[in-house]
Length: 258
Image (cartoon, rainbow, N blue to C red; front, side, top):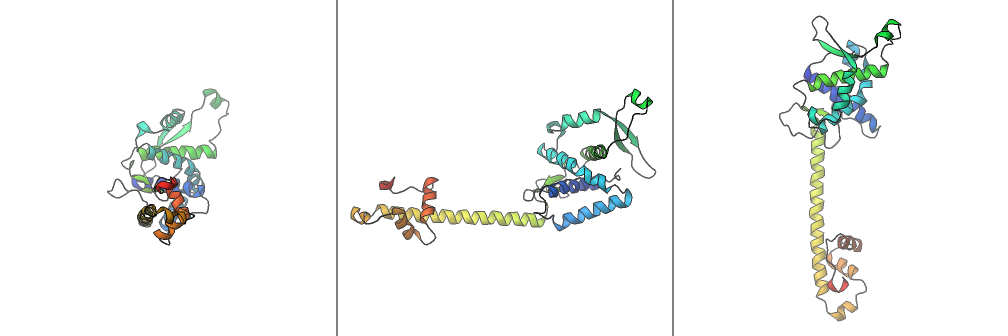
C-alpha cells in the first residue's frame, strides 16, 4: 500500500497523479513544466523508498484524474458530485479494515466482500492489480475529501493541469507564474488585435461613405466598389476583408450595392 501522507502532501500527491494521466493523454506534444516534473520525481522516489509500490501509484492515475476533475466540476461539494452514487456503491461492496503501525497515523483500506461458502471451500483469491489500484485511489481520495484541504485544488485555465492551491487566493486559475504570464500575454494580444480590427473597420466605413458621395458619372467608371474602397481605406485592407466584414454584419455596403 502507498505511504500515509499529511493532508497537504496527500493533496499534492493527488494532483501529481492526476497530472500524470493528463500528460499521458496528450502524448509527447506537451511536456510537463519543470516544477511538475520535479514533483513527479519526488513522488516516485518517496514511494519507492518507502513501499516499492510505484506501479500501484501509476495505476491509480486514471481513476484519481477522474475523481479530481469531476470533484472540481461539482465545486468540491459531495452533494453535486456526479460520481457520488458510484463511489458510495463501491464502498458498500467492500469491507473496511482499520489498522496502524507504531508511530504512524491510523488508516483504512477496503477489501472485497466474500461469501461464507467461498471462504470455507478456499475459493477466495487476492485482489487483482487493477482492484488494488482502485482500492488505493478510493482510499486516497476519500481521505482527501474528508480533510481540511478538500477545496485547495484547482485546474489550470491555460494548460489544464491540476495544482494544489496553497495561496489565500480562492479564485486562482493558473498553476504557475509562467502559465499566468502566458495567458495574460495571449489576452493582451487578443485585445490588441480587436482594437486593430475595429480601427480597420472604421477606416473602411469612412471609405464606403466617400464612395457613396461620388457622382454617378464617377461611380460608372469604377468596376469593383470593393477594390476602390480597399484602395481608399489603406494598404492593410483587402477585398476579402471587406467581404468578411459585410457577411458578418460588421460593415454596411454602399446603398447602391445593397
